[in-house]
Length: 151
Image 1 (cartoon, rainbow, N blue to C red):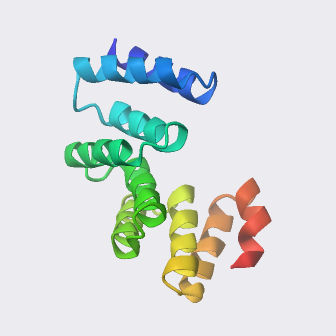
Image 2 (image 1 turned 60 degrees about the vertical axis):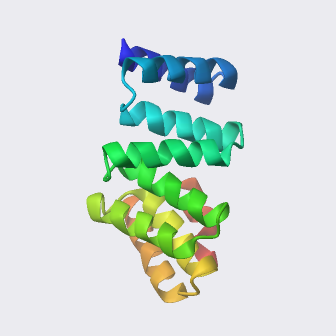
């Protein structure tokens, strides 16, 4: 039941763009299990991207990381929020480094960390290394092929 609520919420959010109903389903899923990391992550993503509720998203990312400090997607997205909303480069870097320790070939972690290094921490050399690594992992990734030369 929990997984069905979460999955249907993700479908409404990502495919149908019905953000209001997706939020209702995520809330129902959290009533069933307030510590379900996937629901916390999905709901945080909805709040951040679709609703622009950055504080609500941050609260849910932090709850998800309390439950599972090594949930890679949460680490990456929370790192991105820290960088773009709060300009907290050092904390964002910690999120990306942790994500890559857990999953060294995670394409979003590699690319987001490279962007942080290039744009926020002025470390183009290391950023270029991460992009080269990402190109090995996902040589046909559309974003990478379009932006790799900028590193």
